[in-house]
Length: 403
Ligand code: AMP
Ligand code: MG
Image (cartoon, rainbow, N blue to C red; front, side):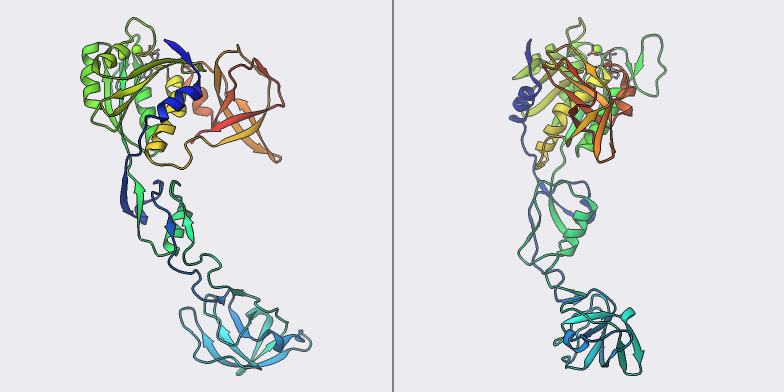
């Protein structure tokens, strides 16, 4: 089994992953989905010049001299509420009562806010001057007709949903979510409602992978636990192939009962088995059985978790047509010196925080591949490069932020 670098493994994997497809959904169901079209506005927003304040539309030149001690008196000739337009044209010496969002009447070139006026029968006293265009929102200042407001490949946030509503889109093309079968393997692994005895442990990977798949936009299909026999593995993998992507955990190392490799090999073409130069998560299987990509992740919980983040999450993002396949990464200052043997890239479960205008990062306790607690306390994976042996306290390092 050859040793391969993380980036090379990822490049090989991504070259085999295809976009799944597109479906239409209501924008009210689109939160968290990946946009599969550019959204172009047909309208201006706002559609017309309108008032940013409750106040009076007027002609700025009329009130240039206005102060609280010598106010300027204007005749109020009309009232314009939001959703209506003025009937007349404003003339010198006149004002129109106007509400926030109401269109600026023809003839007016400023809005004086109500707080700077006093009512006097059918007149107002203006206590302050106004600059031309003061308190006027320009037609199209948010969005112009023909403008691309959202680009395909983004993951839709609440503000994106708002943007689609601004331009009047109720249905939108999003990427289809891939189904991802999860197969846990191991004679020692139990379901959560069983009672462990002796060496038995619960199926933590299956549930963690399910959550990772969901958070990456996939639809997890939980297939339970395969026993450490080729027969059971092949039977369960055969079921798994109904999904768009298959992810298994365990059984890819060099132990006597690590039968995932031999089972997958017997089932189909083009399986690659690697030692990836990374820690945790050295063993990794990837390939296709028929059309279906299959990931054989290592069994140790932290290895399974980290391998998913490095290889499966970017693959799901590609299936979903995401514009950006990589994790968000920040540069952060190390709070203590770390060291390792050169030769593998280490990913340390770490706590990133923002203080005094910079990110700092601290490894989150013990880093063993079975110490899930550290990963559970972490919000980032510190990248300790392949050939590095030591990074000093106070130096900057790259940290992948966990999603
Ligand atoms: P394996 O790769 O099958 O040799 O497993 C490596 C280690 O991970 C062993 O200690 C297993 O008990 C553990 N392990 C494997 N699968 C799971 C799982 N689904 N949940 C929790 N631990 C697991
Ligand atoms: Mg095993």
